[in-house]
Amino acid sequence: MIRVAAVGDIHLGPDSRGTLRPSFETLPECADLLLLAGDLTRHGTPEEAEVVAAEIKDLGVPVVAVLGNHDHHDDHPDEVTAILREAGAHVLEGESAVLTCGDTKVGVAGTKGFGGGFVGRCAGEFGEPVMKEFVAYSRRCADGLRGALRELAEQDCDVRVALTHFSPVPDTLAGEPLEIYPFLGSYLLAEAIDTAGADLAVHGHAHAGTEHGMTTGGVKVRNVAQPVIGRAFHVYHLRPQERAGSAAGAASSTAG
Image (cartoon, rainbow, N blue to C red; front, top):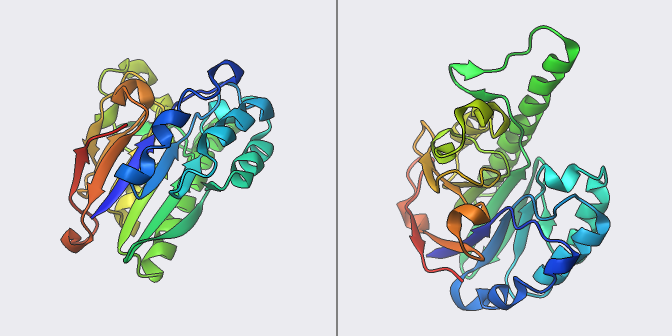
């Protein structure tokens, strides 16, 4: 049994220093790793990234993160990434991390992702250059996720998790205005997850969304935006022996 703690959209700033640390320090008691699903800062400044770094440093469990749109706002994503990595986090963008949790090899593939919408109501690479680039960027993010998941398959990971900020499915957006769905996620992410295979997909971004969803290929999707889960993190249990194709049993448990 692998216990995956996850949260996104914590939006930390200088005035919130230390707010999550007491809960995060309980992680070794209830989880094997922590996933951070983007929007870790408010405006993506290095100062805010230092606050996040202090919250996650030396927790006693591995930390894997992706950035969100807020973490890009100040145009310093590389510096934000470097600060989080200095604190020990694996920060992924089209990359993977392999963690050993007891006797289990856990692989996490990550990308921020981007928008574009979902099947039947999605943007296409047509028209003005800026629209073509919008969709092309979403596709590059999805391709990076697909490649990272395939790398994990080649490394014979017992469990594979897809970590994104933007949503791969519309299910977990229920509660958000329909008009903004195209800016909350893209079907291209789900397509990447289903073609490469994963046991669980975790994302944030949709503050007014719903926790539970699923890809058409049967991979469970969880929206862990903090306003949705209403706590410092939520814990999901993955049972490697239940893997069949791309989906495994994922059940929510207690969280800090």
